[in-house]
Length: 378
Length: 126
Image 1 (tube, rainbow over the protein chains, first blue to last red):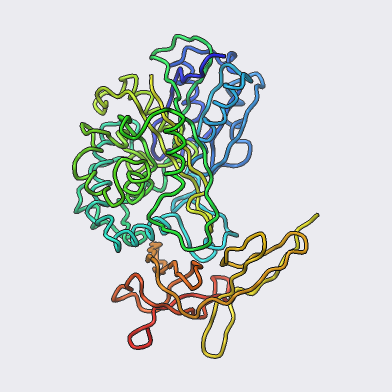
Image 2 (cartoon, rainbow over the protein chains, first blue to last red):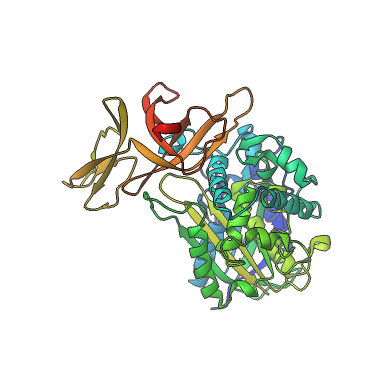
């Protein structure tokens, strides 16, 4: 059996499109990915759809007007990790020889919700008492500020960096440049996090990739998936350290082991910067720096375009927005194009190894419900 | 086999003070709050009062905007090793200090259901 490789990618603009549907966005991304791969719809044997907010049967809703021929559709909801989890499941099927060519896509349409934080389960203990995702991250930030592991300036500088990157990404239609002062002066959402430290609440988008074990000749070089990990949160009702991103550190260890690589080998990263604090915590969890070293790493310029290991050259969630079903696949699209040298002004020169990380969901008793990490190379 | 639903109380008023009720069982020996809502088989659940005082691990003030008043949320650590999440009541200016002593106080959920919250213990009472 041949190694499954990513042979085509597609992505829509990320922005506010109340006149569109998630189905329309997904179709656009899928058609672009098929064209990029040089694959006909009839050659696709299965579809894996990541979707977190939409109604049931999202994959079938998106695909019916593309006349797919009735191939299998697997719908996967793992909150913000849905798209990356779909990729992981597709890789398993390809490696098992179940299919030879599949499409993975992710989509969400937050305009349909009308704004505000992502909806969480209403019966959840914490959510009944007012928990929202920005508050969970804000409490992490508050504690880490107290312990001296981060600074308010470092939080703001993540927002500045990622929006600077996003200005180079034509997909990030919602992105505007900002300054540290503007970030800190924007209205509070959940203290110490201000509005410009949160990914925009109402953004729509979709992304797709084509994977195959067959030799293909698409527009760009095929991309290998050296590591693919999905992990779930541990039930920790006792006293835990909220400044340690345990599930990400655990997922990273497994992914590095699969790939036979370490953090020092990674050239470019797309990670889950839903809030500024998350990027700083994930620097440490991914092994880019020691505990408490994230502000120094950021200040050194290492994670900025032109630095040692640029993080979120796409602009990340903060600049692009975060339609949760699409985010994990969008990260993969960005990494593929970085490795293939197709990123124009935001190209990471000489990028050979890319890593994506995405977490998912807030339920009481666990750090995060899900985390997925992928490591890619040509 | 079907699980047995419990209808546990999750707080209790004792004189002038309020405590939270955590649980543990043979299958879940670590104390947990909120208490278990169901058990499998004939497993017995032990209820353990925690509080009335704990330590403020972290908190945030949420600003919903659109005319909705800000509210505060907190994670509070109790002996012997239980963390509880809930609303943080009382004055927020000056800002509560992390690691402050807090106590459990009565509160009501948005639908009027009696519940608990936390309040920083001021001055000599801490």
